[in-house]
Length: 114
Length: 112
Picture 1 (spheres, rainbow over the protein chains, first blue to last red):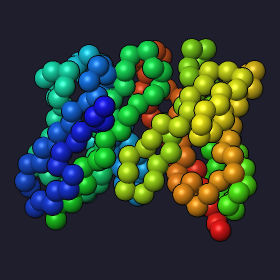
Picture 2: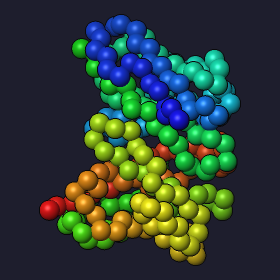
Picture 3: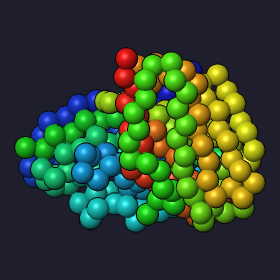
Picture 4: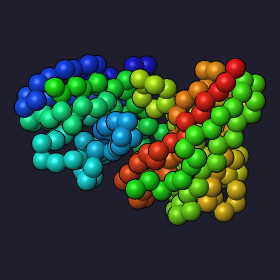
């Protein structure tokens, strides 16, 4: 079975540019999570969806960040405009209802903003 | 705002059994306890999950006392490849809307 698929794997962009990260959750999973990881702040939960509906976005750092899940098989995390402090690894994860806390992570999108 | 507390780091030697304990004093009645492993440059990977007593799989064992305020991940006969960060996870909130917030984790260093 295919795992959580994220794209791009690596992106280097200039400050001020728009960045769009994409995620395809595991088929049949109904929860989707976006995390950000840095050395300083560790693994932070940004936002999560249940059945395509955003449940909690309190972890989104500021208005420059937005996330959407138009259908069960696709989600985007957008940063506009990007700043150097947004440089991090962004992970998408998904969970199947009834599986407790068992979530499956993608390989991450490594973002560098210069 | 993780609900868990675990040691920041641990050292071990190859072939030893490693036990990592996590405190979750405010665990809710219906909460599961889940452990993840993360290698550098990879996303966290599910290891084991339990609700009470003992759970064992091919990778690890999880011991949960009756009061469920703590849990211990046991890795038998570790090897160098078990060097990783280990996270204990308890949801913040309840049910399917519970937030899965990772704490700082325990960095395990296995030495030859």
